[in-house]
Amino acid sequence: MILKIEELHKQLESIKIDSEEALENYRQQYLSKKGEIQALLADFKDVPKEDKPKVGQLVNVLKKRAQEIYNELKAELGNNNNEDEVAFDLTRPVEFSHIGARHPISMVRKEIIDIFNRIGFVISEGPEVEDDFHIFTALNFPKEHPARDMQDTFFIEKDPDIALRTHTSSVQARIMESQKPPIRTISPGRVFRNEAISARAHCIFHQVEGLYVDKDVSFADLKQTLLYFAKEMFGEETKIRLRPSYFPFTEPSAEVDVSCNICGGKGCNVCKYTGWLEILGCGMVDPNVLDNCGIDSNEYTGFAFGMGVERIAMLKYQVKDLRYFFENDKRFLDQFTGAY
Ligand code: DAH
Image 1 (cartoon, rainbow, N blue to C red):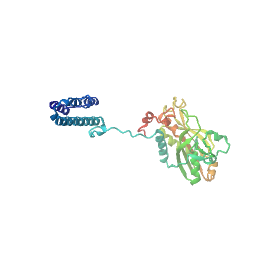
Image 2 (cartoon, helix red, strand yellow):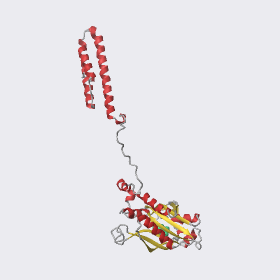
Image 3 (cartoon, rainbow, N blue to C red):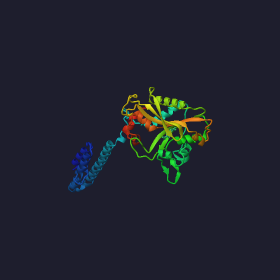
Image 4 (cartoon, rainbow, N blue to C red):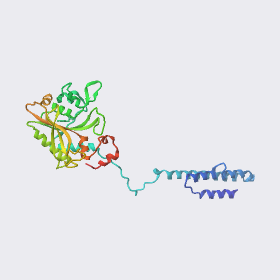
């Protein structure tokens, strides 16, 4: 029996384990009720009485050791499976962390602002939740005038005087109320319209509004400013054309097209074979608007313009569907990484 105990000690000390399965086999072979150590106890009854204390003690030591080894093997196996516990491998190549990029709308917005900053326009901003006066009345939309329906407005339920601004032209009104000419400002911001969402329209989008008020500001100044903008934005060879239009807050008013930057004006499916792409609305600030905002229309004149940032971004990057800008699909956004 003593020999058997010694033999088992030897076996235990040389055991190697590399899997959960092997560990379980070990447990069954040595520690379970049907295991070899338990089997020794079955033979214990045949040990001469005088040897029993000594042999009993040896079996106990063996049993304890078998359990210790089991615990050690188990801990070792657990460690190998747990990567956190492994020492750092300082030679491992670094994993690139993806730091993200600006949204294309933010990039184009910044580009528009930078272009106007360079010729002395400063940024001003106004509230998105705005009152009727600044969205409509000050801008020469008379009450009940059908021109108010040009833009489908989200009103605040509790107060029909308050709405989500439908255009950044509301900032014009606020600036003119609070500043004295000369005023040269650019107002970027979010606007809201109650429109069905489609490839060409969304209920939230971004505009940049421009305003220049001073003595003797002329339509020629407006035209030259917009030509400068178009060349900076779409390339030196870009041309512009102005088409007569109507806005309540400008007189005369115009819509501005740029020569198609894709076909160079020859005609393609992006410009619908016209050679031109519409980019903004503009005009000379209506004298009523100046007066409504406390600026003497006998002394001052001004021009204003407003453009949609999504529209410019769609033309610049040839994005065919406006909804891409709002879906935040990483595959779409990743294409603009490093574009500006
Ligand atoms: N507010 C107009 C719109 O949202 C855009 C616009 C047109 C702004 C002419 C202007 C302007 O300042 O002069 O459609």
